[in-house]
Each structure stands twice: as C-alpha cells, then as structure tokens.
Length: 519
Image (cartoon, rainbow, N blue to C red; front, side):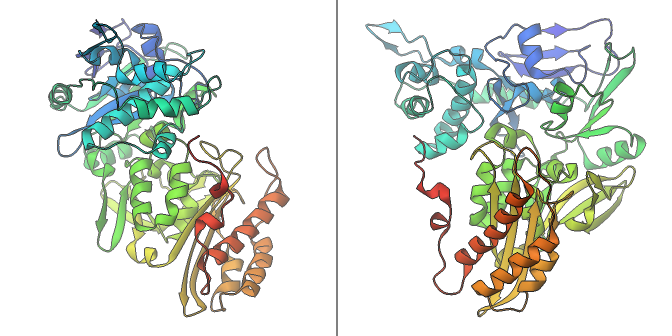
C-alpha cells in the first residue's frame, strides 16, 4: 500500500507494518497524526477521536517494536498525539486487527466464534453501552492480554485498573469492564503471530535511517523535515547542524502544541530511533536513564530501587502516555508542574548534556534558570539523567496531589529523601513542583531539619521555614494557601512514615488506602 502526492519531497518513504503488510507513505506532512491517517486515509474508523490530547483513550492503539534482543514488545499509546513518521520501522495494531486473531474454536451450537476474546468478554460482561470508548478499551485490554499470555500469568483486578488508567468511560462504569478483563483469559485463546511481525520489523530495520520531508501546504510551500537518526553520534551531528530543529521524543507534549495550539513546529529531530538513548542501566555507581527511555521504563527502574515511589509512578499521567513519553523529555521540558523533577531532585540527580562530542553534567536544580528556561546551549541536548545509587540508601518518598487520582496534572508534587544518624537528621532533600516558577528544593526547610533530632518539633520548624521558601500562585488547580498548607502537611506525613519510633506504613498515612480498589 502506497500513499503519495505531488508534494512528496526528499528521501525514502515512511514504512511500517499494518494490517499484515508493510505500508509505505510519502507526501503526508510530518505532523499528521496516526489517528487522522487511520480515520481519514485508510478508513480504519474503529479508532475514535475524543479529546484529541491523549486524555480520554478513545484513540488507543498498540505499537510493536523489536527490543535489543530482537523480541517483539507491545505498548498501548494514544494515536491522536503520535505523528505519522514516528511509526517508521514499527508495527501498528488497531481494533480492526482483532478480527484476524479470532480463535477458530466453535461455540454456540457450532457457529464460529465471531469475536476476539477481548471483545467477547466485553459483550458477555456488558462492558459497552454507547460503544464510543469501547475500541480504546479493547486495545488496552488486548495489550494486557498479550503481555500476560506471553508471560504465562494473569493480571490482578488492580493491575487491570492500572492498565486502563488512560481509558475513560461514562456509560457502563468500570466494574463490568474490569470483569471483562478477567473474563477474557477464560475464553478460547486467540492467535497472534509474533514471529511474522518480528520478521517484518527485522526487514524494516535494514533500511536507511529516516530523513523524510513533506510540503506544509497550510503555511506555505515550505518543506518540513523529519529526521530519525539511529546512532547517538548522528543525533549529535544533526543537532549541531540544525540547532533550530525541534527535538521530538514521545510527542506527549508537542502533539498538544499541534492539536490544541495549532503551532508550527517546523523541522523535527526524533530521538526514538537512537537505541543508546533508550537504555536504563547501572553505570559507575549510578542509575543511567537515557533521554529516550520511556516514562514507564524510567519509573519502573526508580521504583525498583525505592518502592515507595510506586504510587507516583502509577499516577504519572496514564499507561499509554507513559508508554510513549520519556523522562528525559519531561525533565527537558522544564514545566513547574512536571512530576519527574521533584523526585529526581530528591535523589540528587544530574542531567547529562551533550553538544557534538562534548559531554557535561549539571545538578538538576542548576538546569532550571527560570520559568520554562534552562541551561542548554545552542546545539546541545539532554543525553541522560544520572541518579547516584547512594541516593537510594536514604528513605525516599514521592507524593502527588491532584484533583483526580489517576491521569491528572498535579496541584503540587513533592520528592523527599531523608537519612538519619540514630534519631538525628544526617541528610535531607525536599523538592517541590507546582510551588514556584520552576521545580526547586526547599532550602530553608532543609536547613531547619539538618542536624536536628527527627521529632515533631523539628517538623513544625521546617513547616514554618517552608513558608519562606515558597509563595505559590493561585490557579485553576489550587489556591496559594492550599498549596502551602498541603506542602507543609506532606512534611508531617514524611515524619509519620520515617520517624525513629513507630513509623507508619504508607497505607496508614494516605487517604486513598481507605478507598476500594478496582470496583
């Protein structure tokens, strides 16, 4: 299948696996979304458009990629904010593909079962009413279905709820959908030829790196370019040669610039094809998180070393957003309400910056200069986030406060780490997002605690000092007074969970512990 127009510009077409074959595309603009291509160009209208900003999940599709070992890995993502060129070398699965995987077993008096187990379970459990959101749920459930079938496991009800955190439903509610998520494993298994998809992707991997161009008719006859280098050296060279080009990783932010703000983003350099940047590994006494590693990978690595961060991990955006977005992008973006930076500051993280062959590191607090301004030089980019392993020896906590439990922007987020020498505070890190123009540490509150006994009196002194560290703004998410009071209250929670005598587990300090899960 080939789609071309006279405006097709230079280099090779975008090529990816879809509906059992390799698709070649030229002439589509670099910021055309996967959702628009599916619905308008190939008439795969099962994928729906709801919010068009990666929030509702109606557009959920599943992408397949080969990992470093050549194994196929699947991930649910939002089609509405993914640009078409980012599919190059990948596999795209939509709700239409489920029919091809329908099991051959018969039921209901010998008639062939017409639906995939995911779909059949949704029917049996009454998990669909108006049906608009159902294809998105089906694709998220299919991703879960394949992950657990491959591993020979079954998800818990809470795991299903976490996997569906990026899918909203207003008709049936979530209980019958979660019922379907459990029921689908009881039905006859569906076939999915992983080997065939892997072979197709291996063949695509032999093609040259993508350097794609297309005319931008809505602005001018200008040709915009999309570069997808495959090595770190090529990325560094391109960045030096084209410092005006915009770096693109998961498109979870830039996608909204295009869809909601109608911004002209011009030339793009895509980090997703650089395998070195997707590494998450221990190097020289530190956890090295490549700038291209997904949020899911990065948070999993942090939570594995500091389990108390699991709550912040699972509440960071949604599963499809974490599958696409990167922690490097979240840090480089520099939003004062970004949830990664407070946690990373509490862990003494540094940003590793690269310009050509030159590499330097900055403590994360020094990276942020002012609101949405950072210390990057022209032609420089974030190569990695580096977290010293010694930081995990402290007691680490992450607290996210938002109006919704799942998939919401924080009113404030706190990253905290404390180490005690007996009952004395030997070291402490208190970092807050949502309290100032940038994410920053609470220097006065830290000073009030350092070297003091870890008692409630010390906490009160730190709470008072916190009012000198921050004068937060009032906006639609919270008032200034609320933010300051909650920030102070979180210090009390930290003390309750880490005090030398009778510390409380997080289940006894969080209001969410009394709420039913997965119902």
